[in-house]
Length: 194
Image 1: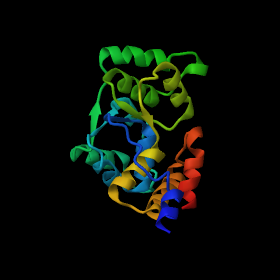
Image 2: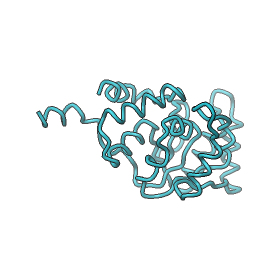
Image 3: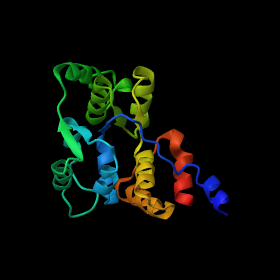
Image 4: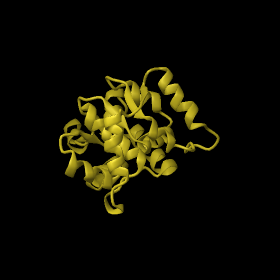
C-alpha cells in the first residue's frame, strides 16, 4: 500500500532551485490568496527579493477586506522578503523589454523580475507563459519556477499532506485565478486529483 501511494505521488517532491528567488506580482497575489504566506516563505533558505516595480502591480488583496501592502510589509519586517531596486544597468535592460514591439513586450513586473534574476544570478518565480518563453529563448541560464511548484516544494518541506496542499492550491485558483504554465497542467491535475 505504501509503495502504491509513493508511485501515485511521484509529483510530490521538492522542485526548488538552489539560488535565491526573485518574486513576480502573480506569485505574491497567489500567496496572499492562499493565506499561508509566512509558512510557505519560512521554509526557504534565503529571503526572497521583490523589485519595487512588482509591488506597484499589486493594488488589491485577493481576500476581501484585507490590505496587500500591510501583509507584504509584514513579510518584509520579519525578513522573509527583501524589497530591492534595479541598478542603472538593470533598468536599461528592463526598458528594452517593456519597450519592445508589442508581440515581444512583457509587463513591467515580469520584466523587472526577469532582469533582476538574470543580472544577479538568481531564480525567478513566474507563471505567465509569455514571460517563461522569453526567458527560455533569451536567458537560458536563469532558473524559473512556478507558483505551483513552489507551493508543492514548500508543502513537502513543511510536512503537509497532499490534501492540505490541494486546499492551498484550490484557494489560490479560486481567489486569485492562479495561472499554471502550459507544461505544468498535468501536474496541477495530479494535485487537484489527490
